Amino acid sequence: MRALAITAIIAALAGCGVETASTAATGAAIKAKEAEAAAKTQDQMRQKIDQTMEQAQQRAQQAGDAAQR
Image (cartoon, rainbow, N blue to C red; front, side, top):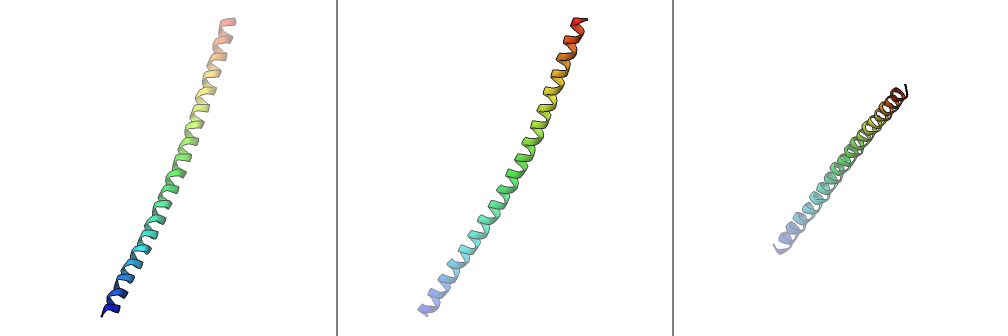
């Protein structure tokens, strides 16, 4: 009887370990997707900033050209 109880306890603890490992793997996958999405957003924002800076330079050039006329 005692051996059966010990076996049941060991089986229950082993099951918890598997669940914990699975949960950790799922959490890591979610974090990886979040990091990928953040990198994509950062790239998009960098492109928008670059476009805005280029437009500002063009406008400044046009204003300078207009002032020289």
